[in-house]
Length: 100
Image (cartoon, rainbow, N blue to C red):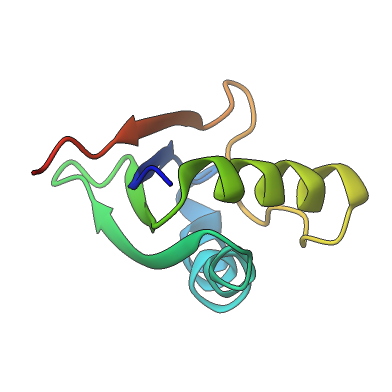
């Protein structure tokens, strides 16, 4: 079992969609992700420029989290993004915990 983080950097579609973007992330998306096996917690951050947002998900089992997230996305059980810029899409990166 490998611990780590999922880092997602996303932007609102426009200044007009910031509230919808934040509401979707906080009320829908993060709870959905945290309900999946392998995920433990999440933290959100906004760049000081206000142009992008970073969500860091802690995974207590990266492989289990990756598989559960892929299944949820493919099956359509997760809500569709609201107010999220999709072109270009959010960046996604998995990081392995190297802490002793």
